[in-house]
Length: 244
Image (cartoon, rainbow, N blue to C red):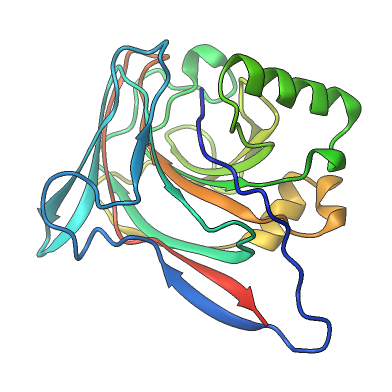
């Protein structure tokens, strides 16, 4: 799977004496957007090597406006950037799939497709990485995308793997995946994830330096590796931040 996102650069520090307070930030909501193109600053991130792109649009469903993702042997992410230095401790959303992808197998590159995915893209400082990982991230930025994230967690929906399964992405271990849902098409599910705990589980060594800023959130459905098709929906997405 190929991923693209813009990274924030500035570090974040809590005020030393003031207690942190939680603030909930709603990313550009689909529920209040007109039908059609996703609202700004959501934007499409694609790969020039893939001709077919997953289609995203806002549609009415069940009396509310939601985001529809249609994958047809295609790939593309829908990305929402965040202000530099954003420390997000929780990510919440709702989603639904209409069908799983025939032939998907997240343990192999040839099967690396999902009907729905929500990714947290972190601005992890490169000095927290091993020398080998620093080299690979820099090479990836040089060859593919200068703003490639150094660490990402993707929450996925799968037909085979049990909910609660962690695994590295088949293309790069800088992306760790957590299966949240298995099967169950046609039903809405509400999710709320503790990003600090999940980052520690996904990247135990890198997490010793604390939770890095969240650079962006990405949504996607893809079928480019298997030649598969997917239809899924996403409701509004919010993050909870620590503010002094």
